[in-house]
Length: 269
Image 1 (spheres, rainbow, N blue to C red):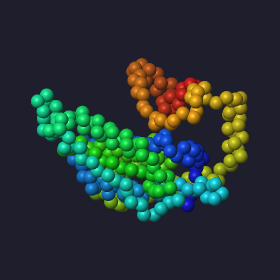
Image 2: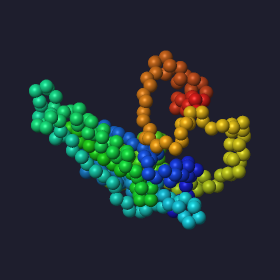
Image 3: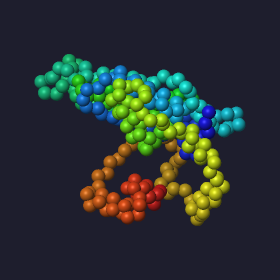
Image 4: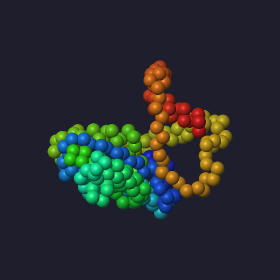
């Protein structure tokens, strides 16, 4: 049993606050794979990672006192599902598009894949039942697959996924089973370190940082009781000059481009 980090406390609060609508902290990654793929080996590789990282096997509960804790379960089955969509692309119709006798085209298959991913995203994860993770492998062609990874932000973030995928690649190349990786750092060790920090000093520092802030964000909805919606991406393509300027500005101040963009958002909010 582990305590929660402050970030996890906040995420759990929002998840508990509205447990009926969509969970805005459900995260999803789509991985397109081109080339030969062994689904059984991929599944075994994910199970190896699930067994390797205790944090992936966490479930979240509240004691009678209201204190939130995360329980780590030893043996957790991997939520894995496979859907073959290739039968939607044969034979070809007279327009030159791939279609079945029912008129299913390549675009129909793409739409179906997107719909399945959206359904995975919309289906809430039960935070009390580990793992807060679901894997859906879609077969799109002879050597075309899409892996839909749906998890909760309580388990992992944008920094965690690249690390996990790098390990997945190594385990898959080694045949899907342990041990091929060095010992993983424990999230429990980080939580223990966090518990040793001076909380009062941190509060004092943040009070000073936020001194003078006397109002919330200016872009909050006029009606906060409105229904929640899932976040969506809105792409914005920067010119080469703007990209270069951002990169150089960040480098000059020892910041990443991501930090600069978050700073811009802070000014907007």
